Image (cartoon, rainbow over the protein chains, first blue to last red):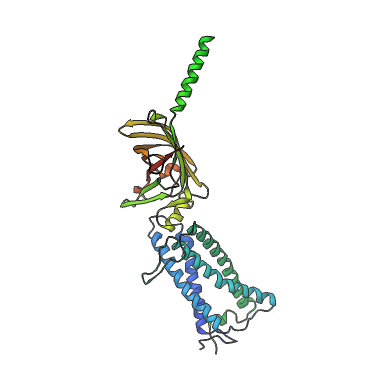
Length: 182
Length: 193
């Protein structure tokens, strides 16, 4: 059992944050697409966006912790078999930090465009900061949607690559993100 | 031949005279925000939701001696819809409601005006909204007119009307109590010099 990453394997904290974020994003992406098409009288018309905003803020907290954790500690060595693969994997990993971060920021800018705060399950509120920019909620909304679609594509590539490593190349790429050795 | 030239002269004179007593033209004072286009629609049938269009412009002409010749033209910037809630306004602008991208402007052009007495009147015209043009009747009340303290002359009216959203192709279901939207117009014009 290892809390921290080392050159051979991921630590428990890194693994927990990876799968935690994966699950949160797996809720947020479909929820966001589904809730915007709901009928006005659907019970989820109000509940859906409330949940999406609150969970989005939680994702932001996990993401910040994860970025801090990654900057502080080492990563296990890459299992890429070529320079091209290593570069592609690295780019995808960076986007998997950057896109959620920008999604959280643009989502926040939609909801707080008029100065309203974002409520997180009634536990606490995130106050508005940037507000009242002309067309803020519309521009932030368009960017938010575009980023979500972009993230969906990167996630598909990321998952495809992980499955390729596991089933075709038969290496430890997926296994070491599931279990912390040593 | 002489008779017709006299007639022509008389007609010309009459035209000249009528043009000097012609209806005064007014610019609606949107610059100073003394004009308002406000809408209200029932929320679930339990209360009124109030909003407005912040950006519009228009002109009218009105002559006290011949009020029935009054005319109004107003164009409204649809994207300026403001219900005091950014997320709702974003929703109102998108294609489920006003579709501001496809139909950025609404326009009202009057076709006739009838003074009913007691400062009341009925304005008929055509409203183009969401790409649909339909006749619309507005109940008008004259509020007042006179010199303003800054060297101008102003005249103001109040208008009320309502219509079904579906009539203008806005099909989104907001519930049985929320099919009709009501407009309240507070219009002040500054007479052109």
